[in-house]
Amino acid sequence: YLIMGTIGATFYVLGIGLIYAMTGTLNLADLAQRLPEVENSRPVLAAFGFIVVGLSLKLALFPLHVWLPNAYAFAPVGFARIVAPLMTKVMVYVMVRLMVSVFGYDYIFTTLSLSDGVVWMGTIAILAGGIIALSQKNLKKMMTYIIVCEIGYMVGGAWLGNELGMTGAILHIVNDALMTFALFLAVGNMVYKLDRVDITDLQGLFAKMPWIMGGFVIAAFSIVGVPPTCGFFSKWYLILGAFEAGAYHFAAALLVSSLICAVLFFKVFEVCFFEPMSEGHGHGDDHGHGHDSHGEHAAVAIEEAPVASVITLAVVSVSLIVVGLYSGTIVDRIILPFLN
Image 1 (cartoon, rainbow, N blue to C red):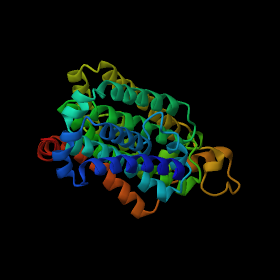
Image 2: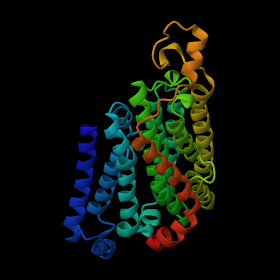
Image 3: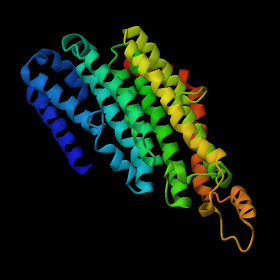
Image 4: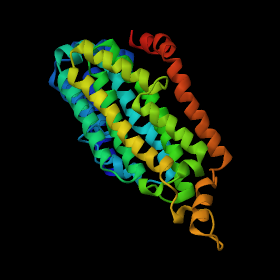
């Protein structure tokens, strides 16, 4: 992560340096005024390329994602639950902000005509992230590839070249930050109790940690795109934007990824809800009871996470529904004024 992050930052700073050399300012409003005068010069073209490559590394756009899965999966839980929701989303925001406030739509979508290529990269990221996630046996590792998939949503949507796509991308930045935060909060509490998060180790976890699993289910439904969770509404805008742009491959990838995520999470639900808790997951020892009675005890023993952790996850999980219900207000009062 340190090496790849440094390389990405280096590309980004090189691009910013070239822009400063050509315009004499780094103020966003001034750049928007001065860049059109030199936008066709080689230094500005090179600067744009450096910035896009640097941000793509930092936000882990496939195939520049190789640093992300191990960095998040093997990081301490407390660190991962903060970094995973924020780091990549901040970089997507930076990309969107530069597209809207500095370079402008005409330069990116008309002069450079890069839209189709980047949307295809987003499509590949969505499908590749989902397919690789299917092969994961560790829950944290699976979620890191879901993040790779979600990055494809945001980048592809931003580069569709229309208002609906950009609206969906910005809305998904907010939604995905909340969804990822909820998932990593839930998994962090699983690690707190189990010391491991291989999917096969989660038998009977719903009976053992019902509140934590409830939050996990809401977050999973939002990732899949089940209404009225917030994930549904940002995906809806992205699909509408894809159809408006004629990017049917991107719309298809969004739908396929929802099906893949449904398979991923229902595989976890099957283990947590329907498979009996194994001998090693019981609370305490048998103390002379038969195997059946021990299994029964393990199936009903509740060992929730600390109250503060449960409350935090509950608040974030409820916010996934609240943000979904107020998506129209967020779009009308915040996102559209920003874009216009």
